Image 1: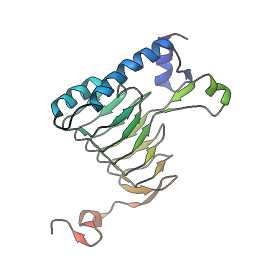
Image 2: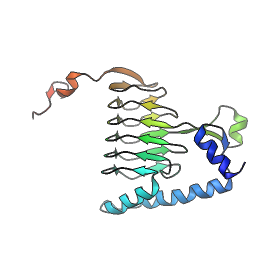
Image 3: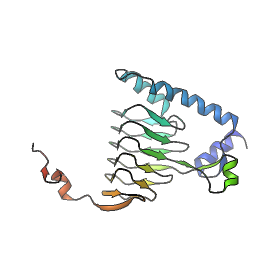
Image 4: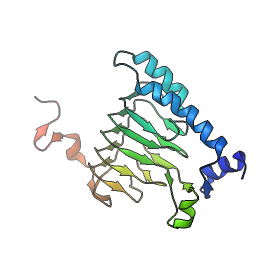
Length: 204
């Protein structure tokens, strides 16, 4: 299987074998940029932005990613909108596309995975893999230590509670929690009045 066919399979959900030497060489070049990003100092904000533009498929304005960042392909298959914030240890398994909308927030230790492996031990022994794209809508907040599995879509404005494992699509405008992650409730008018329990928005 040549490199062009492997890359096609990486994008269309078909199984491929990830030990191709040309593929590994290309991946390592992406990881060199990721390494440089993670070695930046806190005041090197301009350098970080320059590196992110080289690393990611696309990245919008006013995005902030706190190192360390982990990514299988250094962000090559990642599309960030505007105003995305990622706290420490965001892991992007970006063997195929990961789409993130505007004003999305990632708490510490979140994993977004687009790549996975077959159950068959024979295929896994041969380094078999397949990928499914992930889509995260505008204004989503994903809590600490959560995992979003391959092929998942999360609708806009939704909140994923800490330590959730998202195994199925989550609709827009809900709070969802758990393992497996399930809808707890809709985001309602009270969420626009109170920011925490009985604490009103706009008051001290």
